[in-house]
Length: 280
Ligand code: DGL
Image 1: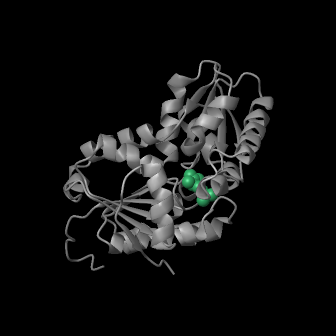
Image 2: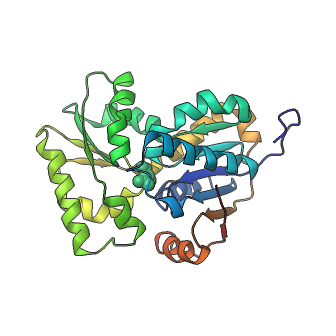
């Protein structure tokens, strides 16, 4: 990348450790169908949720560097774990060297922003990976905006592997969904709003709804992140001009193309163009 030459416009990059980011990409394409996108799933190294800060940071940096090299000026980390553990370091330490005109955005801030008006009891819960919960990013971001809200977290380490292995409807999934929903709610009977703080979890929504009491509002991130992206592009015309408009989407995976195509098409319900890439 030569920062002295203005780079040509390119697609919007969307990154996740696996298939979860497809739930975000889908809502982005519904809200902003005019843009081109590149989806990158690091399926060969998923899940990230149980990995250390340093490893998630290195893997995410590799993915961002790759998406920049593929022409993206704007990359969305459609992964809470990467947003929690890598986003700030990349924004502060790496972007200035990689290319100060490019941007990397995450999914935790836009989710935190919407919480204030949703909760009446001011007691909320977050279901997420162990990495996201341990990072404390949700309470931190929420308290910056709404210091009066009490935030409880519950790590659900098996939910991502269940989704990645397409076990959405199995009985084992019922067991683990019920277990973590109950553990979260046992922490505080006043919880009235629960954030699904992992982009894989909307794929488990039918099961989560089955075990979550009806009085609780479940927050999924897709629409929120799509609306936040729309707002960002409106406020940053220079970035908007750096995003190509052709309505195309290229899917890239670090796993075998056939494996990604088979699993992703279950979630996307359409034929897709998939390419294998290597990040190491
Ligand atoms: N979709 C990622 C997230 O939002 C899953 C992380 C993982 O790979 O464990 O956190």
